[in-house]
Length: 157
Image (cartoon, rainbow, N blue to C red):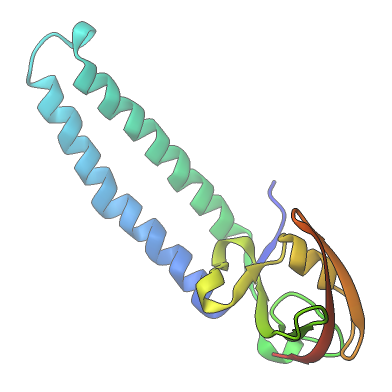
């Protein structure tokens, strides 16, 4: 049994759309590839057929994982988010103490991470270093390139 994962409403909807696409569009496309390769004759020496069957296996594995994710997915409501400390689904405004640069990150599940949109995975080094800290605290966050020092300016939903 998989552990429960929390998502925003939009994140969960995105997973459902991805599953729908894989089961309707991709499954049909790969079935068509298998049929075309089968029509070419001897399957024992047909690399095209083997490749299509392998793609089918990978697709079915991906579909299975997504279905399992959806079975264990829970939507978290904005009112349930504690903004007194950094946690999943909070947005953190940070000041880099060394450079003075100010940035904001939303802490989201891994599947919703998008750095360009300012959404970082809860499993990322920065998010892990910030979790549980409160506004106005100074935090040292270990990242692969060294240690970053931030001051938490604000925590919001």
